Image (cartoon, rainbow, N blue to C red; front, side, top):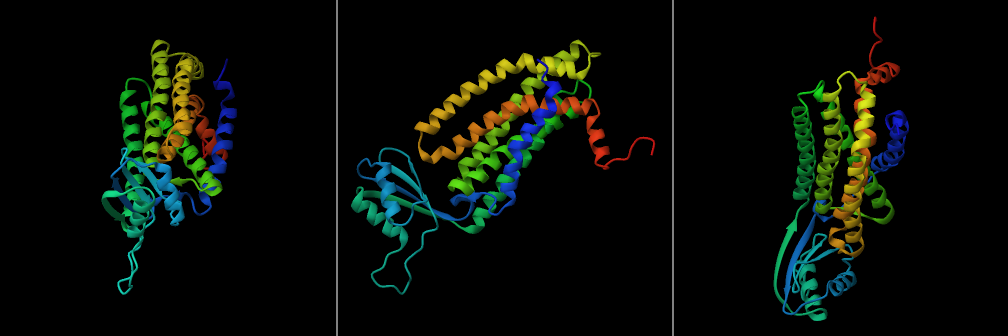
Length: 315
């Protein structure tokens, strides 16, 4: 089986998957932000007796907070994230704020509340969260590039390995972001703090898969320096293919089981991981290793020359 010979088809598959996501990302709103990225309130309640999460969700829906995130911290403790709760007007008589209304309703309909803690996230803090998340992704990408370049320093052109890994990483990020953008417009899927955790985890998984293939390429290059790069890469991909697929499939089975049986509070994390596992496995074989081939063969320059971004030799 010659994987390298069909690299153009592999790139086409990636384009078919990524382009719809990029189009969706270009249409406002890019992603549907959750409470952590807009503004909102967090209510930590401890009940006297154990309570059911479904009962709390039902009462919140009745009160107009159907988008609230409910997370059980124990049999009696519940964390509720919802939109910014308003206080009662100062000049109002016999009126209560939204927080007090939630507590009173839950206490009457679900169970007596022993204690409560309340906190709010302002729009300024939400913007800071978005900025810090973007910085975290950027710093991780730079660190990965530096590490791979250093780790492969004993073979020719180590920077190309790091560069190809970063392109594969961007490929996986675009796949995850694109899917979430499309689902956000179709079914209202939000991105929240769990999504950022999943995105950063996908970075690590993507790079891990890529390094497994690159490490085998490094070993085969060291054994036979004079062999054409496309032969070395194809042999290395086939040698590591079974290991990569087995690891990814076992991970994916667990993630799908958690998606079907787990709670809704971590569904964004699990979905991002599931998409990232599939995309990361594919990109390590069909993107990163193939980019290394076309880079070593000088095909990048041919493409740039075709697009008239670099002059032809001799000009």
